Image (cartoon, rainbow, N blue to C red; front, side, top):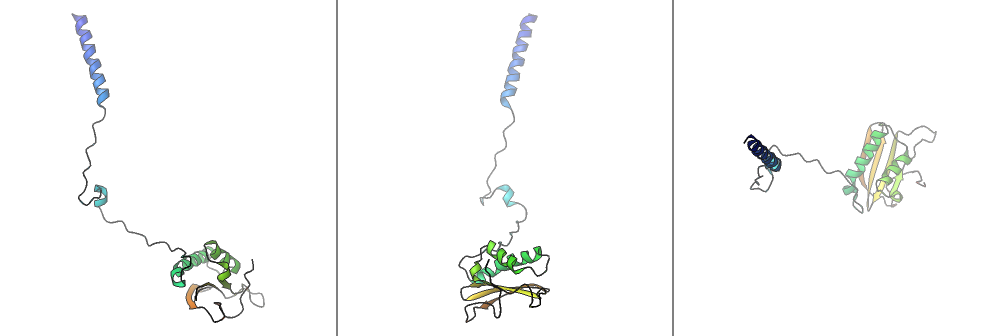
Length: 164
């Protein structure tokens, strides 16, 4: 009888182990939808602040539409240059690298007639009948939107040839 009891106890133990292995983890409780259609995590807490859109070049756009991007690009370039008046070629190349058209640009010379660094560097991009005009100087970066001149250009006086 002992042998029979031992076999029966072994069988019961085997069935229990098998059932335990089959059951596994208890199921997760069901997620109920919020009547507004958002998940529970979305509906709680304070709203997440949204960042202002990053300025971008508006191809074929107006000077006013492109001024935020023009300013962002030039301010970053000025900071990267150590807040000193950068070389004109670098300014033009930087504007071209972000999509402005080189043929629409003008820039003043980097050096004075007696080969000293200039006090300010002025540059422009013609956009339709208006001009984005930027300036780097000891006071920082500044910019305006100006009407195209009767000559068809943006800057008055002698400008550097952009022939590279």
